[in-house]
Length: 174
Image (cartoon, rainbow, N blue to C red; front, side, top):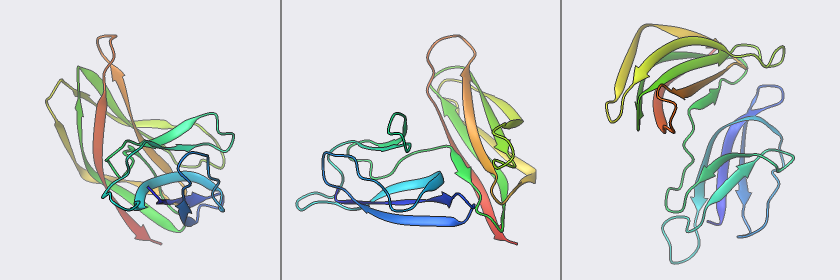
């Protein structure tokens, strides 16, 4: 890949988007500072290819923790986390979760990341191997601007389990 687009929020909670030109092997620093990354996708590939041929990693400022990865050929990171921009509201209306084994899937929300790093568990369901769980919220719950929602999974059998979640979040300006 030659370029990725990063979308998220900055330290004030405002929307931040940046196109980052890659050099193929070395770390590249963004111009802006992201508090939370919501999306990373390949926006330009090299000649002779329709997708990224190598793994693209997005790390924290210290470059000691990989936050997201785009596998070769995937063109977009997959993350079950989202930060609602300042002066907006987010409303979770539904989600689908699946797993490679029996696990507990939980929705966690941090409503005030500036005040506390603590997340609160707001909903839990069980997912089994290969059996997707669809959850429609008759009363969508609100996430205020600056708040972060994320999905977490915990094995019920003690073994390794991979889980995935897809959620619908309506964003509305104040």
